[in-house]
Amino acid sequence: MQPVEPFADITQEAFHRYLNKTPHRLWFDDARYDLYKSWILDARRSEDHYRLSRNEEKTRSRVLQKFYLDEDERLCCRDDTGRELRVLRDWQLFNVASNTHRGIPHGGQEKTFNIIAEQYYGIIREEVRWLLKHCKVCISEVIDVPTIEDRNTNQIFL
Ligand SMILES: [Zn+2]
Image 1 (cartoon, rainbow, N blue to C red):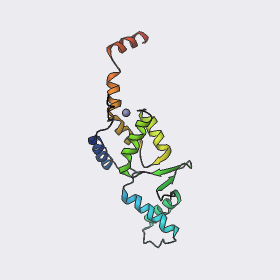
Image 2: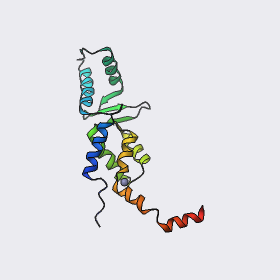
Image 3: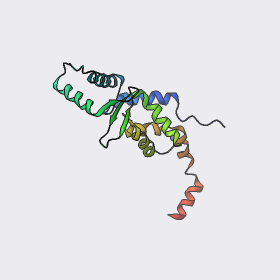
Image 4: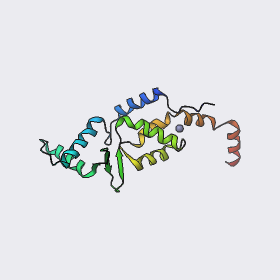
């Protein structure tokens, strides 16, 4: 039997529409990702003669404290507990979330989110929740579980 493909292409497209509609503090599109990266690279070369507003300058110095580049020049960040996390761009969220979910195999939302949050920055709980609500494997299990027999069995213990 062919294993069920958990996410259809149409789900991936809908997920990206959902991401674009609900931006949040941790949201990284390419522009933000590349800006942070260029600030870090320029600071390394001591080229930081920017004409920034006071607010932009505040943001820049916060970014330089919290974010850094790994050996492959990927943007990473240190969270408040000192964990080192790789920053995800918005278009990477789908693959990371769906692969993590598949890898544990089809563990719940909390478990999936916690595993992602241990390694990555730029994704929030609601996004994982949205995606898993559309997982065909998980949906079919929910439908399969409450058979009449199960319900009768449960009643004995109520
Ligand atoms: Zn699933």
